[in-house]
Length: 259
Length: 259
DNA sequence: TCCTAACTTCGTACGTAGTACGAGGAATGG
DNA sequence: CCATTCCTCGTACTACGTACGAAGTTAGGA
Image (cartoon, rainbow over all chains, first blue to last red; front, side, top):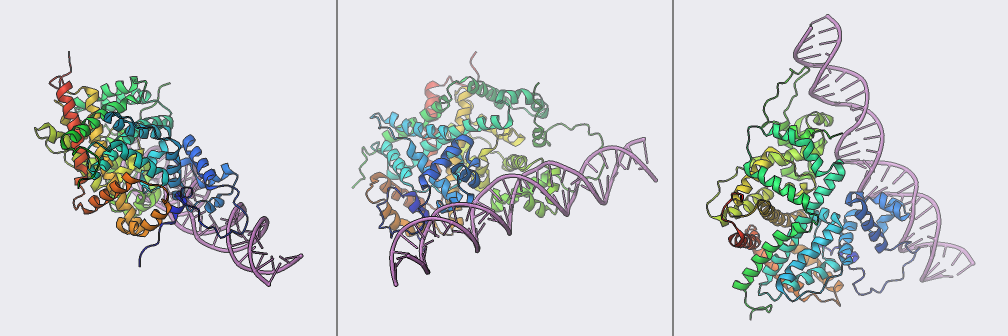
């Protein structure tokens, strides 16, 4: 027997989907809308992270009892899925420039910006990448950025994944430092000041010539970099270089599938 | 007042550190060792994922009461940090080939292999990247792989992060499908069979020309690929291309820092 | 008009987490 | 042989997601 379709898909596409002939619902109307619930959840996550998005806390913020949320959303997991798609919809997708390099870079920069603005997006890696309307819009936009370079279909998908994944990683590394600082109450520099002595003592007998030299240089560079977006530049440039070089040498000159 | 050094560092380096003159402990010996606890936790995570590593379950498996674990490990978070470092120590770091391309690729492949063998490593992204002995060994090894290409210190660090991050992302994408399949009880293909109709209905009015074409091609390709390691190849080749091209044009010919 | 089915809201409660606390027991130093 | 020090563990607290069912609200049909 075949499986039933997933009910949370309807929830995701609740706006985009064509109106169903609703059979005139009885009972009281809902006090809130799903959008209000999801928006409040996003607000909460923005302010205090995904862990703060508790059914009880969210309900309290909305003036509801905890269990009432379950009449809007089937579960916390589904709520998070809705949050992601709704959050992605908040950023308008910019027009793509003509220059291929700038197009590819833009894909990474937009995703990087989203992840910086809402670090909790990075914590959602565990859930299935549901096909919501805004996710779909974005994927289409990302593909159109890598279209026309002469890449094959699968390669286009892989290129988008490469760019977006790199942007995520960079944002994650940055966010990890921020969170560690605010959780431990000490800045990265203070931590090193407090632990350098102990670490040196513990590592006695072992030598890490490259790691210590590079680690120090990297630490100073990241510390000094006022604009953390600079950390994106090196890797992004290498990736784009690699993709463009490949497209130039292997490309078949257009987006159209071969006959 | 300055902060105190972090006590969990001593735990991480418990073997590598030089022996302390222990002031002859009184009381009964511990029945187990920290290594046994961490090994059991790794075993449990390997078998059932990180969520299954509960203080109570782990204790039960070791024949201990739940709270007894806290005499070995200060908290669950610290336990996980220990697990990561100990797991990294399980893989012997292969000798680096002479060919620069193969060196860079090896960095990614080793990390990819670890993440495939122990997907729970991918769930640990949230915790601070503690400097444990095996992490340090590995970082030194990774740096030595990118050494001698003419990259600057910061660039070496960024290159390693680029390679390792990409390997993580690829492993994560793969693992996400596996987990979704085993949690939902239906294979990726079954899911599409069950939801294609609904999705088509929901997306009526919107058109995703690229996404549908590319998505289908990508889906078929991933489905067909018997060896999932192939998914690594495209992105890895692009990254290595980009890095090597950069090193060739900007490099200053050696690992030695400039005078 | 009123009844009843359908629907929203919510209080209570269950199971499972991590872990704080303190009692009880075992081994060592004097 | 006692006191100190440490390991072990039972109990319990808080917080989580959410199952269940009662109470209240609305709209359609008689």
